[in-house]
Amino acid sequence: QVQLVESGGGLVQAGDSLRLSCVASGRTFSGYTMGWFRQAPGKEREFVASISSSGGTTNYADSVKGRFTISRDNAKNTMYLQMDSLKPEDTAVYYCALQRYYSGYARAGNYDFWGQGTQVTVSS
Image (cartoon, rainbow, N blue to C red):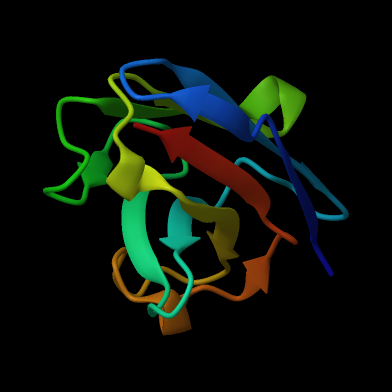
């Protein structure tokens, strides 16, 4: 089993920045693809960003490309999402997720373990 715990969410104004963290425990962290997803009220959970086990490959949703940066520190079992130039449409609960066996980075169903989520609210 893997436990994932997100933190770093909050209420900010448009144009501000936030950094989310996801700490993993219970399994070796470094061997797995990780991802960030988000879900706004009344909408489906959507892909935000992913990072390969080594951190060498990253992928982003078009809506956040150039504003968000995903990274990981395998020594600390921690993944990050640096969010800059935040917009009101970024308001959502943000979830981190882990894939045991790589099967594609953008589909939520490909991830096996999820955190409880952290709320990000961006006011205009």
